[in-house]
Length: 303
Length: 165
View 1 (spheres, rainbow over the protein chains, first blue to last red):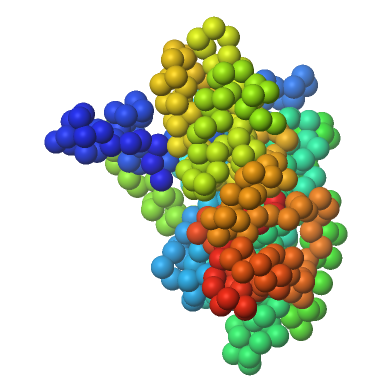
View 2: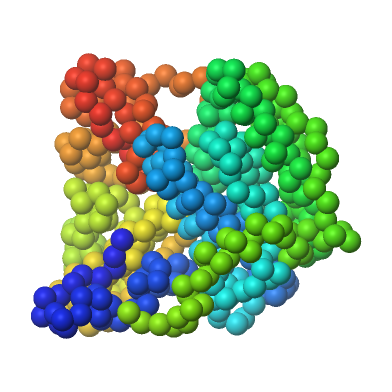
């Protein structure tokens, strides 16, 4: 993707520079090269909505999407079939888009004006607020399908309720995201059923995958105090209320695939702290090294 | 709406094509929401198709270039997130052009929460080449997030379908 058109007349000796100059964005080589995803959106805070708390909440939802998108990108060139390769990449792109909007919203809400790049590249591990579910590496394709079903069903239930949130920006981001997430969930459900009700091997792998993910599911329904406080103001959703919808969806998909709901014990937090508090599994460090390395080695570099 | 219903700046903006579906203009795609011009300054509002649509920046740049070339000194392109874009906003002309380009146009967008279809839904997508009404989905996602990949059992050709959203 490119916002910039090479001009044969400017700086022919340096193609990168010529590209960068076309639209005055010299940092294009590091990322999208495109400006603020909230460009021109009215980001005024509604009365009574505490900006700092809203920013914190946007980081939680944005980090979930960012880290999940990163894990999905690892499937590029590794998917079992070309069609799935493309599907996974597109799902990842949707989530990355949601992350960009949410991180940009955080920078407006807390009054710092920090950009999406600041939050993605220049925060340390303990400052990330994602649930730990999104961190775990995917070990095989059944693992990916199980992850997408669990994550997609939960996020769809969550963002579906946020379409009525009192922050119109957050509500609008959710309004777009639910359409995307319903396709993600459908894709995942199709594979969970196919693998669960497939061959002896595919079924064994699907059951094992669900067992591996299950310990991370409980955390999805325990709200951080900031979420619960905002929920009372009509700005956020207390995730405890999502459990019913999540369980119903999961039960229908699993029964279609002749699978049972796993029953493993939840992975522990530390003194009540989990992903939403900035406490993560060791897997997050590896993700951030890859995600942030280039930007941190050359901050504000131009190519 | 035709370009004649709007001001001259709209007419210019309406000629800009979509970077990923170049057979369509941004107006036909339904993402060009408003063009306001006061003297030689223009404010254009567009709505993204998908949250992560990588073509947004290109659209902004193309709109700015087209309007500047038409003599508007100041061009501002604004993003409007609400209401979210739906394939229902693709114009009739846009749908005809898609089909002519071998891309099956979308049916009516889903309005209700999706009930998980665990059995394959009946096909509602006609082959844009031979018109066969009964085609098969190969993949829910194709070269871009907005398209699915399908196959026609009659003419035995694959084709893309702009899926309902």
